[in-house]
Image 1 (tube, rainbow, N blue to C red):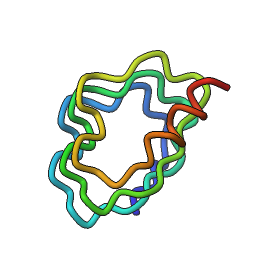
Image 2: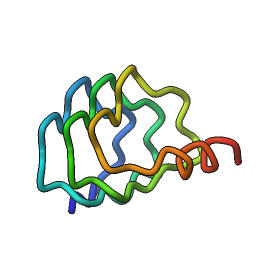
Image 3: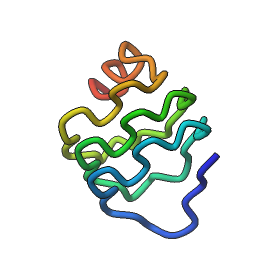
Image 4: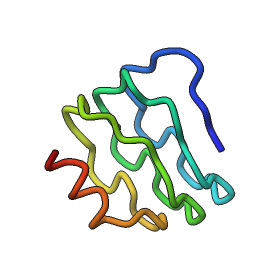
Length: 78
């Protein structure tokens, strides 16, 4: 699990690329931008705290992860 302890405005391009044991990311309250391929190939990633204030996601952000895209669409529409 990754728990961010200080505000993070942007998750950079390929920040967690290939972290195959990463299962959960929390405390993203201040995050506004998620870079391209930030969680690509994080095969164990099943849970991420998506704040309402996210302005944009890069391409292929969750490619080859275990994130439920229907859940992400629901969160994004709120």
